[in-house]
Image (spheres, protein in one colour):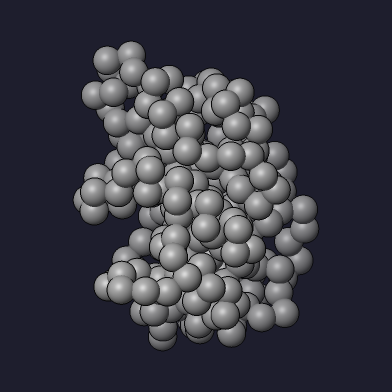
Length: 234
Ligand code: PGA
């Protein structure tokens, strides 16, 4: 079971330090659940520093496929490793929708990060109109087709209509999509999309839900810790 907090473009270094000191304190006795935080690039170093010596991992929100080069605005797997990050998210729907990332690019990011020794959380998920048009399985099949199963890869199923909307997938919808994804690529699958302390236990209790990628509710240390605790009971 993995609970990862995707902070998106929130929390600079000072706020990150404060959050991580408190998270470290609140999760001191947590057992049986892997926990990761994914701050913005500029806050990764301080998170790594404050969480050193704990089991709480630090991951980036994206990563490029080249080790270095003329790629303005990008960060390489080797740079993240040097910093002490354990992994990176790739293919988040905000990257796909707002920054034009493609399945091909997501596949290259995942491949290079895994080859370099990072863990990868690769996000997939359909939009509301794709679900309504009955295209969910086609979309998932296409998005997963660029990924290959291996030890350090996990997929996050994040239906776009459930992200930041307060409208989470029902446990049944999540379970069905997770089982479908696992039939395509045999790796753990996290659920993401409006996960909160109130709905975490039910979602995490589904047979093929192996953890959660939490956005909004991961920004508050109490609610993120509550979700991590809920995971120990699922
Ligand atoms: P949310 O975001 O929990 O705020 O819906 C999830 C995500 O985007 O990873």
